[in-house]
Length: 178
Image: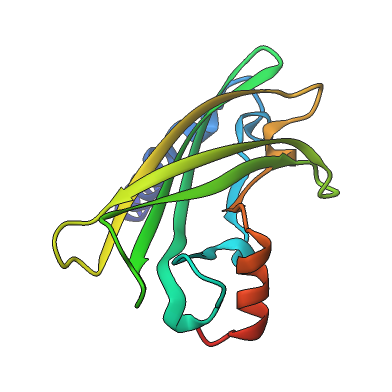
């Protein structure tokens, strides 16, 4: 019987050790410290840059752009949230590519739970290609401080997308396969 009690005591001690700090949580709530989600808007995750000329067809694409992924970290100070956002942006040469760089404009917006845009800022990256390289990419790092206005960071969303030209929008309506 004492062996069974010893085993039960050891099991209880093991469970307490595994639970670690969760028994002694800090006074701050987890939701107040949660970061908002960072979401690449799928309809705006791809873009095109055309070669000079009137035709906006696949054979006249100089470069394609892709917002690949976004990772967000945040810290809180008073009624503000400081975000560190790393975004992977990939460029690909199209059939009409000339030159070894492409500039791709994109935006980062903060939205409320009802999708109301609270702030939106444009950014741009320049992607360089070497020799006959087909694809290249960069990780763009952005640091911003966002006033919370009484909201919690977990209530907000950070959304990203390419700033599309009317020609790019029309291109993707007509040529969905690319």
